[in-house]
Length: 197
Image 1 (tube, one colour):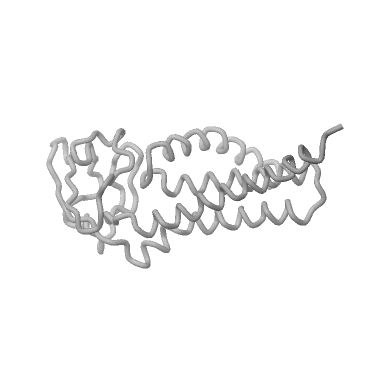
Image 2 (image 1 turned 120 degrees about the horizontal axis):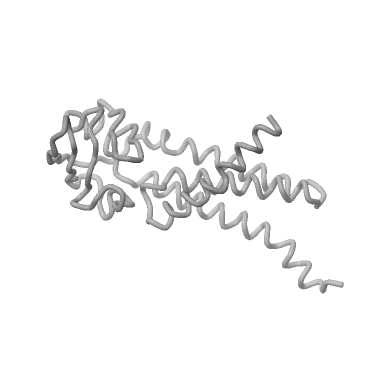
């Protein structure tokens, strides 16, 4: 027979997990609001620029099809976060491959506009919805395996979205945890979606 103390801790663990996810969500919002804006709307993982915001700082400096090789003399693959210790107004130094030639590119980072902040926070809003659903299931349904699995799925989805939205803006461990979650959760969510439609 389990002691009342063990039962209390067993019931507290899901709420502690939910609290950790909520703290991560708030941390994510602060990063998204303060992280400098480069004007690159779509950048492939290999560094290829796909789309540039015509009102952003990179416009007239980068072109779609450019391949970013390094940021501040650090190879792109090792430059996580991309703009470490950079703030709006700082000059960014890139080495870009354009039409087979390596060229240096410099431009000034900007503060994110309200529109950019809203664009960045869309995944966070979805993560918040996952979080609310998970907490609601935990708080308002009788305990059981289905409720626990639903709660854990919601918390995993929320954490996945939170870390994904700041994977290149924050510390390197956030990027690494996101990649691990992508490897684990990506398959899980595809199977979950196909099974439950």
